Image 1 (spheres, helix red, strand yellow):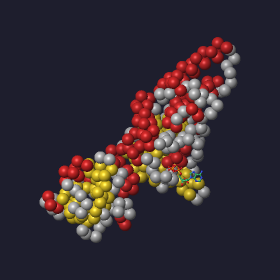
Image 2 (spheres, protein in one colour):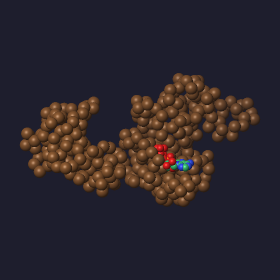
Image 3 (cartoon, rainbow, N blue to C red):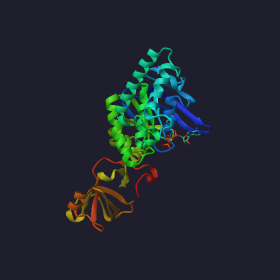
Image 4 (cartoon, protein in one colour):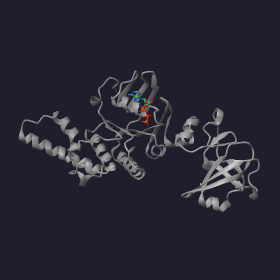
Length: 343
Ligand SMILES: Nc1ncnc2c1ncn2[C@@H]1O[C@H](COP(=O)(O)OP(=O)(O)OP(=O)(O)O)[C@@H](O)[C@H]1O
């Protein structure tokens, strides 16, 4: 394991931000800390980085006890949502900064020949990093002359420059628009496949986590709800919270089910007897998908079902149509009160 967090507790005054959190993050993987706003994701990441200290518990990085180590001794790279670049330095200089500090602590080496050799080594490394983040032609620009997405890639290059054991990213694409976010997400996955640096990133975006991460840690209200691969979590959620957080859910005969797992058959077609009967109240077309709101005859909440346009057309489904409803898969009993069901 690359990072082991054990029994971490963190309070801000009376407020419990993290409560007995234990997580083991495997080496070389891309792990997402996912959960709703205020759940404690950033606090956990900052404790791993050493930017915040825990009230209880331990952190070890690459097998080394790190609970009381300062951030600069942990060999971690860090990227925030809003990256603070040195505005007056070029992109290349920004990336070189960490390398220069590391090699000679900011002091000039005494001999001219030494200085030249070192300069060449750093320049070469910066050129490699610029290529890695696809910014080769932008090295001479100032950060203000880059787009938001390019700036975040520069931030990643800077974090990677010192060859960290672990890369920690706090909503790295959070401030960007949806299209750029999506591009950077694909790019991060490819970059990770090339580099295999153990990476932990915070996100509140389910799709981002499901698409990019090898492992997902779901954090809510200062606690870990579940840890697993995207498939594990999606197919076998540990509880209603995880199920509802990872995708849409609807209530069908007292159980939670995903709308695309609701089978809808017109009553006129015979249909699966014994299922719930209802009337299609609304048909909404969203891109290739069709969403149906069906009001059951029995006193029960409206059921949502989704299917492709082709399926909807083949079934001839329209508003006012009488239909049978049935779940295609096992369902989860609804938590008391059914608060998580879509109504
Ligand atoms: N320095 C602080 N002082 C007081 N409260 C804090 C401090 N830092 C965080 N908190 C509180 O701790 C809780 C967890 O915050 P944290 O930033 O870890 O959540 P998060 O899951 O990362 O949320 P978001 O997605 O909104 O960033 C929040 O309720 C926040 O208000």
